[in-house]
Length: 175
View 1 (cartoon, rainbow, N blue to C red):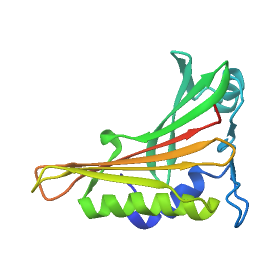
View 2: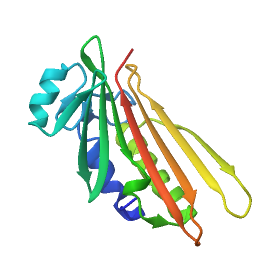
View 3: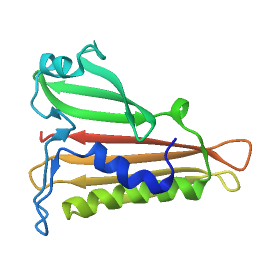
């Protein structure tokens, strides 16, 4: 990631700017991402993208900058209505980090989402390897109205003492 672990708070605020928290009740509603609201048609999404996206396999693809990091954005539709939003900063967009920085980055993103919505996430972390470890971290928040948010972070070791920290954030409307 091009983000320092300390800037994760700002990134998350940008990413989830359209969610509506209700303090201390845990009844937040996740409405979408930025100006893209769940329920929009692909035509409405393309109009908002103003020529900066493409339709591919029934979904809309674009890229965006969040805190100086390029994220691939994929929006999926169900019955021609926006249903899922995927934000991904793959290896091509990452810069070297160590495994602890990657774990801290994931924890900050997840914590900010939990605090903003007063909802606890389910978390899993798995390690593969002994000296050089791949680390997969997954957190999921299920909103009371049925929406969900998932944060997946993957640490991929490099030949030096660092590696790459990739992040994928998935926002999903109710079924």
